[in-house]
Image 1 (tube, rainbow, N blue to C red):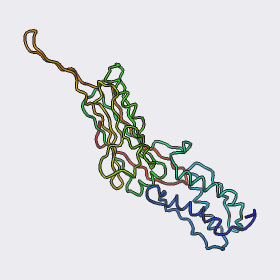
Image 2: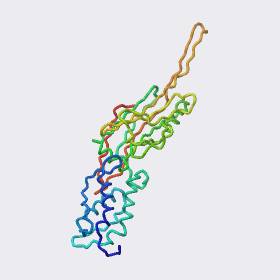
Image 3: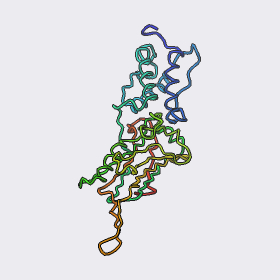
Length: 303
């Protein structure tokens, strides 16, 4: 279509459909559940008026603000004739830009992904088993789906710090370090191995705890020690359980002599401080942008 020509229904329908899908779609990676009003496409052959184009423009502006990109559509005023210059030179590229970001939110490191809330707990000079459970409340499943669809992530990490260079403390530094950052998001898991995987798709969670990540100590003296990340979801709630297991048993001995029978058992303490952190991350909501319900987090079981 040449510059200056009148735009008919078919020219704008693809853009209108894509905007509606992303803003108003629901379900797992199905849209942002915004209930944003976008005028229905006119019948084929109808002239496009400014009211219809205004609804297209406002939807494009909302997504542009959210994605931190330029709204390349041109605003029109009452009485303006909408022609190819308002749409044709830019709409195809704009559809590609928003569709790609919607399909692959994890690919866009230039987005403003900020920590919405974070839980971080420590335990020092411990032994046995330490378990943390964090509950994330979204209000309902639709809010959860929209939040994850728009790039939301729950990131689990851990660390250990021991200044004594004790062998057992060093082993826990290795173990927690190898966990790295384990992520629950809309992105599919990257491995079926609980040792190798770094992420898990939230919508694949069941209604009871399943072990999604496990790290085992490399040091042969402490190979019984490990940590796990488990999760489940129910309705609009998602639970993450992180467990530290110091299953190592201290060496002991017994015998007789020196005036009678004797025995001893060494101390079995993880020296230093272990930390478990879970961050809730998503795109910030700029003015006039997509509005999402951030989850609230509650530690129901502390380390």
